[in-house]
Length: 396
Image (cartoon, rainbow, N blue to C red):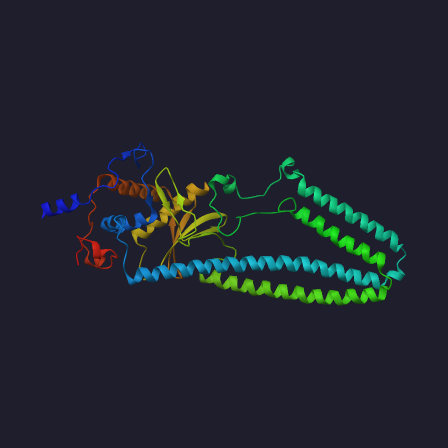
């Protein structure tokens, strides 16, 4: 029996026999590149080294549960994308509504002013010239703000959280820039305000210059104000509808109303997170921002276990490590989610960090020395293994 086992182990040769171990305990190939270990590798290796080995040999998992899981993950990603779209539309419609409400206020003031123009003691033509000159001044200031590098001279730039001060360490934003604070000195607010003011003042200057019947002008302005109010009401209604849809999707995905999603894995376009020092790499299902912290989320589908599996815990820890390396800030925990409502916090502390890196080194050591073998005597575990069809050591 021992000879048969020895022959089986010998038939599982190492994939990187020329790798050497560094001072930190991680293994590197002759070119100095640390052997890559994905978060999925850690999950398979912890479940059973044979499952990990067979996956490396090109044996894909085969089961109805895997197919269902792929579809559920795709649905989750689409739900997150839809949530982001509705949040974006809510903000856009509210911004448009705010500007249009400002227009309504201006039109209302104009209506009252034209209706009572004859009772006002000022020269209309002179006031028209003043408005025209002010409009020209706003236009020139706006053009200067666009073409002159005044922000660079004043050291004014976008405000981000401290964790994002180094662009080289950022998680690539999938949906939008993260935690942009904005303000009147950023985001083009000054330029937009100057140009809009120039247009509004120019229109008023021309209206005062060429209008001959104040009562007729007041009537036209009143009708225009009512029409603009209807348009603004439509925008507000769209914002409320989109906000309601966003709230429904946030609740469905166990996200608080103000929780931002920085990253969502679609298995095609999402950035691969890597750590060249340890060899870790992977794509978490989501990275959310909670209380200013980047928190990785690993979503598991299928049957909800009584307690989290060790293989899943290692995968979540791998994503916590990758988020820390990528963003430059340490997440307090990772989230392991089973189904819709079963969430677990996996603390990213020193004990779990040592556990993770020890497992990474074990995987790399087996890549160097070979000899993968089943590490359990549980028939149920083999029965539920998606690579049992290709396993010589299966118990069933």
